[in-house]
Length: 300
Image (cartoon, rainbow, N blue to C red; front, side):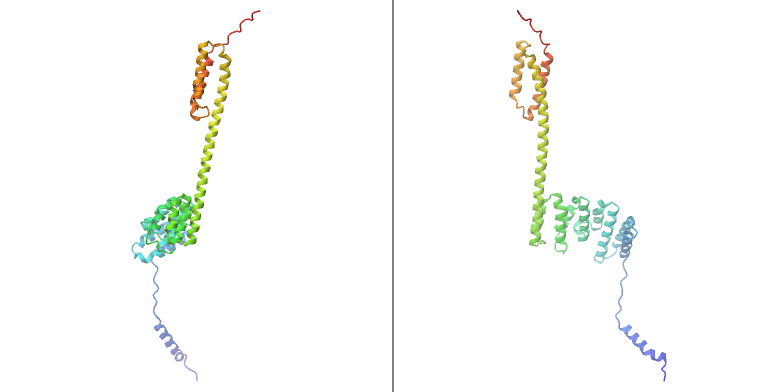
């Protein structure tokens, strides 16, 4: 006996209807307008390589976030900052990054750890770590941030990428010693890095001072030797005409020589102006001297 297909299928349909009615209804939340704009900005950045449009889309999304609850969009805000930072860097507008993110968070201590980390890495790579010095310092000193799991990694990043390159060794030591986020091994490694930086800084200063001193000594020695050569030439000329001068002029020249030469140390750089004056006096003596007298006739 054949059964009616409609009759045989009826219990199955009824069972399926019962199962569907017993399932809990799960409402999938629709993505917010800011989340949709975030996806659009990411596509513009990565796929289309339209960095300006990606940045403008992020700014539109930020305007829409002002109408949403503050705690409901933390992930979206952080992601928008990441996309915006990358877009600014791609357009070679990396100097605007910190001010751009601060216009949405108002204070550096309110920045998400990921956003602050990107700022430190960017400015450190561009050889301008001083731009984020005050911001990271304020973030690390804020009590609300000291309990975050990212605090230690940001403190290490601040130490290696900001404080040590800027030569702020005392502040680096205070950060390592005063922070409870470092373990004993991490604190020891950080203090060794600070000590190595201090030694390198000391050697660099001593090397530059030695180079500067050698350059100054070489310049003074060259001037002194040139002056001695000039004096020798003028001295030979003065001696050759000395005995042809009247006695009063000879005595005056000898007196000037004694006063100027014996009074000052020729090797001292302070004596160089006086030695130049001496050279000028010799030159005047040479000009004042009349031509040598003719030799007297030899008496037979």
